[in-house]
Amino acid sequence: MGNFIQRNMAIFLAPVLTVAAITLYNLVCLVLRHHHEILHELHRAAGAMVLLIAFYGIIRYMQSLPDDES
Image 1 (cartoon, rainbow, N blue to C red):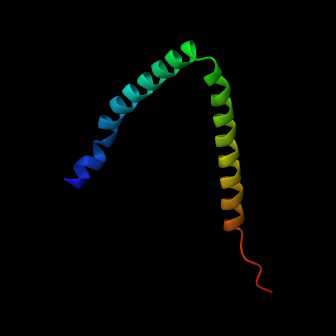
Image 2: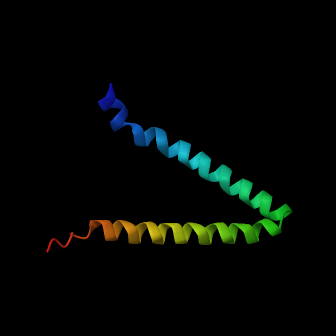
């Protein structure tokens, strides 16, 4: 049963993710049309996510470096 679910997960996830993406897009368009100040906050949130991803990448890179055992 587990193998069946694993093989057919893409068939299930593709329509679910498509519906979620379309719904999220429509909600964002609706909110931005009626609340212009939210756009500024979305830019801040996007910048924070970029910084989070950059810092996470730097930390993971530093953790992957071999230790200097002198």
